[in-house]
Length: 218
Ligand code: ADP
Ligand code: AMP
Image (cartoon, rainbow, N blue to C red; front, side, top):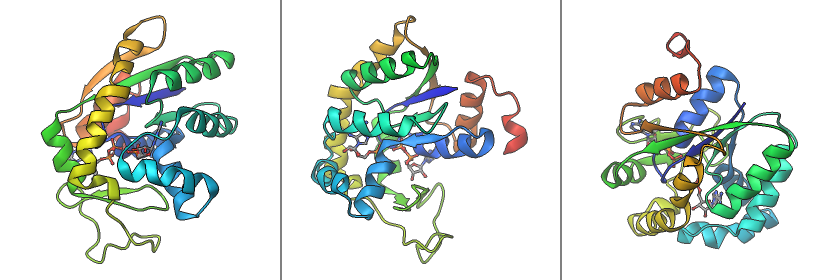
């Protein structure tokens, strides 16, 4: 099964992807986490991506598409988190999945800007695993050290100035994907109310994907 999570930064895509991965064994394919891991390890890709990411701009399509294409070879199904983010990326993914005869469902995270700012300014991230916390909604350990020993960080691009820019980028480059996926010949598009609590959003997504036993796994 392939699932695409579409929505603005801070909507809760990574949080939900990690829950679904644990509950149903769907593989989370987060391009943001992959890029941060490359930065953490100092790879060539990480060095190229760094300036774009810190500014809140998108990494060029050809680079991201090549990364996803390579990663997809390892998985028969994936939960795409943060990809695609542009129409050319969506077209490339359609071509890749179509070639493998894989239909997909798109989950659109519906959330307003006030919630986004509140979520991003309180976010703490494990740069190694991508696990997320929030000062108020999912508090990290007092010493800000995760269970695997990694120091949690606040992302450079979660600063208010970068968040404003990322939202502009979202509106300009990613929002057109809502119309792209509303075309029923592509995937099935389902909108969820992402302002609800983490567990309520999980249940709504599980229902949309036809997983009826989500409550039992919580
Ligand atoms: P995205 O992957 O879409 O950028 P995240 O999953 O990282 O978003 O979530 C952003 C922040 O909001 C994190 O700090 C996370 O703990 C918190 N969060 C996620 N979902 C919810 C929710 N439903 N209610 C409250 N806080 C949430
Ligand atoms: P995220 O963790 O999804 O918020 O992504 C963080 C940053 O990584 C983005 O602001 C971009 O700079 C870069 N990035 C992640 N995914 C993509 C993508 N699909 N296309 C281009 N850039 C991306």
